[in-house]
Image (cartoon, rainbow, N blue to C red):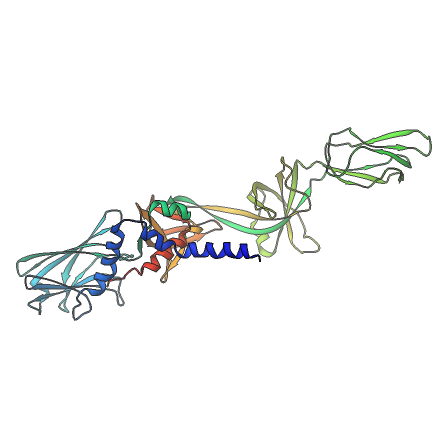
Length: 421
């Protein structure tokens, strides 16, 4: 590797590593305030004897926690006056949350037999919101507000654009039942012609060479007959491309000797090799997406037939489709890969595979609201090579990061987002 190339790679890696810092440094002061509240305030917040956040006002107090040991996460609270526990029935507590995108969520807590108050409603992940606590203790109305953010970061629009971060709305789609196979391009039977000499004799002139495009009836060579000592022309019976030329000027053309091979390559057969039980699921009429190995270009076609028997060498079943080749860039003899779509199933909500990441022990995507990005744990259903079904965790229209999602993940992880329980 040259020094210049090594320098370029190192610079690129450094730029990616510094993205999170750039996103925060170039954004407004609100980001720093957000970090202070999400981390410093949470860590410094006074804790009660049950490990929850202690909120105090005018001699009254509430210890508030999210209980999730062996139960779905729910708010739990304990009441105090002058630092001493009060019975659960001495007051009432309501927790009002505002999630990203101004989504409101209320949790009313009820007295429990163990002396605490507990909400019947579940606090969904992520636990990232603005919190307002309203309470009444022994007739005294109390109120607290604070921020509790996790899995959240801000990246300025300009920084996100330069980094290639792109979003798209979550929406309905289809999940395909697909089979990945290999194949070979071949000329279509009846569109390949071998041009031969009618009479033996020396080749006097050649009018075409391999790679030339020719039309039906065009002269390809002139030969002098050994029998009549006169010259005659041989021509191509079809239009197409000269694949091979097996003659030289002055060489002797034997009677019936193949001199040229011409093929009409405006369309080609794609012979796909299907192995084992997969052949039982593939029938004519299904969609096929063919990928050219040389440059990754793709084309779609329809499977025409599944040939009887098996290919001798590979013991595979051959499934055949026809591929349009107007630009001539699909070349006979080339290996290709293909995706055979056996069936398509509608899904209420899908996201591209590129949107998926892991965060803690969740499958997640990241959504964007303004310049703020936040993690969304999702329950996934079926998936294919391009997209996955989302069963829960997203709403239609949510702006999901579909490109460079790993950069958003990296920025969130570098910020050390809290999990205040």
